[in-house]
Image (tube, rainbow, N blue to C red):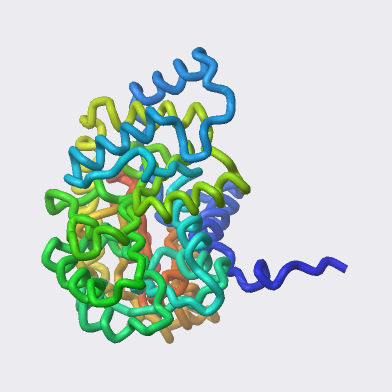
Length: 397
């Protein structure tokens, strides 16, 4: 009898990965599918980073690294945090992991006891509540709709905090909405959190460099909360290095030491060659980052313009990341033939099977009236995808 653990049975499969898989299955049948479901840059890793990886192989970086990562990489991250964010950390306050996903999970597993509450603003990245489940905590979802640009207010945050609140996960720029908290907005949240010293702030800043409003703002800049902010970041998005799997945390020594202990038992240090590549990403030229951001901004402008021309879509202008998150619930209840659209999942499946465009329904992101589209693809693909979506939606009655 195959008896899986309650822990596993309580988990939901990743909706984004499932949608990507379905689109690949249709592609395998010879159907031309445009995939807007995956959150990954379509650029190649810059050449100087690849060269550093090749050199690392030749230089025999093939043995275990220290659990928190090579000292040279952690020093490079310390310098990056000082130069770009004006934040002071020591190398001992940095822990590198197998992607920022593991970084977030490490922090939750190190901090959360059964029954502890973790505040998660919605829309949220699909894995946050599932990670809280793994840590046996309770997610407290704080919804922020399109009318407030998908950003929670200080009053909403204050209302969500209880004596059981142990942490909040704040993602800016946001996956799935592309919303970016301004310095003033973060100051408002920090003022609330300053009154609740038991709350650890997990600041997921993986999309830091893909923002269209100038300088990235981190909640770690505010002295009243600084000593309990854990920054999560990595090389995946800014440097087009999703497959290299290098993320990091920068935070209070006691939390970093705890995550180091945890990681030492279940993965040890991340890939040695990837670490040398990540080091080159941080210390080398930042020109490719700026070029990719320019391309993403152009695509953002294109997809927003085209989405606004689609009847029944309510669209805001995302200020970072590479996602559009249109409100589309006006199509719920409509049908095409004997196919009825009841919810976001139905709509995403309809757009895939009828329009041959892969998006992800918003339910998995805590926003059942929206769908997520990634515009990390070519201008031509964006134009054609939006044409197909418009056509498919026009068939619904």
